[in-house]
Image (cartoon, rainbow over all chains, first blue to last red; front, top):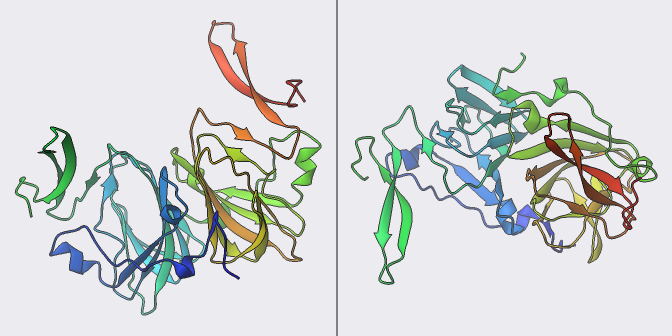
Length: 165
Length: 165
């Protein structure tokens, strides 16, 4: 039986494999697939993504958010959680939370030989930026003046010295 | 091996069985247990609760939120999801999202003979109120003047005609 709104069956949602990172960072994510569950329900205040990491894949570059709380809950398999304190293994049923502005960068690497699945939850804030302590990447604001004189603010991937990728 | 922050092992968190509903509503929740995962990580922008409903238990009175998005992800067992459109069964791996202000009230009832487990996720907004279309319950604002002249705003459980419970 198919579900009716407000229910959502993740089985019918598209498998997204895109990354907004420039190379050489994008390839480093490996076999990473996401389904956008909260977007599928019309939510705007936070995102909930169902993420599957194949062996060797990563959740993201190690990063922390200036204004967004983030939370992960392991559903299947195991991952290495890497933070400033080092590395530990997270297994199905365990979780982690990253308060906005903590300055403690985090990411997952699947060092096992089977898929790992988890939910990633993050609030949505216009004023948020991510910082990457281990990699030469930052997001720079760029204002584009449109024909109607409306200034659209976008972020572009840059080296830490400001040169765009 | 025990986990270090920012990781959290739900196994070591307290089992909460409290309800802020007055009677006769509180008892109707039945065998409902929550662990507050995001609070345990120091997050403030949204809550993530691991909820276990025994047979016959309910997630909440059927309600909708004025300003908070809410989302649920089923981990184990099955529940009946009741909304204005009627009833449908949600099973492990399925989910539902409730946009703020939708006016479509929702809750879960465990009509099965085994426990059901799910994650409930909700943003935290000071201006939020919940509405209960099926029950004679509303939350009324009450300002209490403290000795230092600070007015503390609290909400009290009331009948829909304004009489407090």
